[in-house]
Image 1 (cartoon, rainbow over the protein chains, first blue to last red):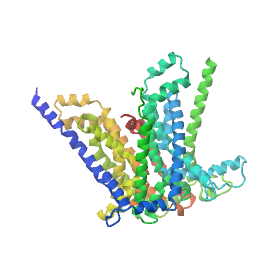
Image 2 (image 1 turned 30 degrees about the vertical axis):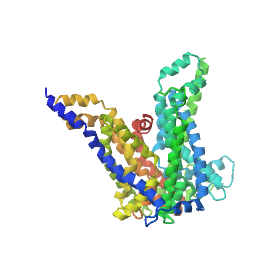
Image 3 (image 1 turned 180 degrees about the horizontal axis):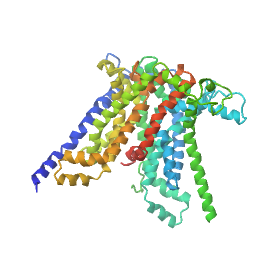
Image 4 (image 1 turned 120 degrees about the horizontal axis):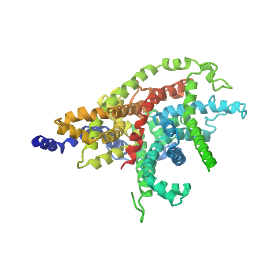
Length: 293
Length: 273
């Protein structure tokens, strides 16, 4: 048999994967790594290339910085946990495998494809002064004049509108992670627990949740990182009424024309992302006496 | 016992229906808003179902300054992005799926890590670089950024797709005299094609939806989201509603077509370690 040919194929095989990876590696080097390094450069160096902290000092003294940080944190702190619980409920519902559960799951994943800007505009049609929420409240006889949900008199309304819109848009990201995680749990564990007399609640608490931990961890990391860069939903619903960090980066670039400050905000976001990832890794670390899968 | 089971089932279905309505209702409402006559948008009290459906609002949106050209730009950017991403990302996905080699795990971790970085971190320095390179305010520039965003997704998805195409089939073809390239082109590729098409559509959606980078990198040559965002505060409500609906429309179709692959893309890519 042509042993020689097979040998030759195997010989090239050792280098082949590297050749296949090379284009993507180079591409990400030029269009991912180098902008990343440049961003740090923009945040810490003047146009003459001198190291400086002036942009960070300016950022800390920026009028909007405090509230942008506050609102970003509040939004993340409220949205992410609620999304985790909602996604868990939906995932467990799907996992019962009721008739039509696949279709139900498909409906729940529709928002995955909806842009943040579009989601903001969709919810604007509900919360605007001439929006559907006011229409609904009127026809129920609750109000006879429209309520100004979105105005600077009532920032907390705007804030909650953003929470609802973002919850609606991005819960699906958590959901698909959890559903994929649930599918990987062997039915044997659940049957064993049932045979041993575990109540549904106990099965959830002592069997499903511990086994779902890796999926929950990656869902939380991705979701939190995406949530701290929330931008278009906030702008579409509230304009500049509720400042957020990514929005500040955008306005510094497009309104105030300072790419140094814009990059400084971006670097701050990156630092937060790294801290968050590290925090989750620490929080979900395997504890002593626990057996990892 | 049977009665309790029935009760249980009823509760389950009720919960599912409520959640499904919660997800679908806003999409239905924005569709209604986009086909409500212009003056009725500002009416009080406004009825949820308009007195008659009209394409007037959509017409106004499409004829607004810059919208049609930005629509074309969006499609072009998304198609270029799709081309770059598949051309560069597909070989990488194939390599990770098929070969065991030194650095494979490092490469995969690196790809996963890229998702940690915010778009702003890429877009702002790229704007500075693109001004030097003469790519600022060009569709190619936006597509290059979108490809950088979509590439990690594409590599992970395509890896998943080739993992699900049995390696044995390719090996069988090779022992029967096919070259490696022949085995790939005649056996693996046709089997992976539906998955690759799904990956392509997903890349298209990522690009079509992206707004931050596209707004930063353009001035005249806006994509649709960038055009809507940059004129947002100056546009009437009906323009915004029609814009929102128009942005959603193609993604709804694509998401329906690729629904089978969604878990490979989002779930599988992140949970498998």
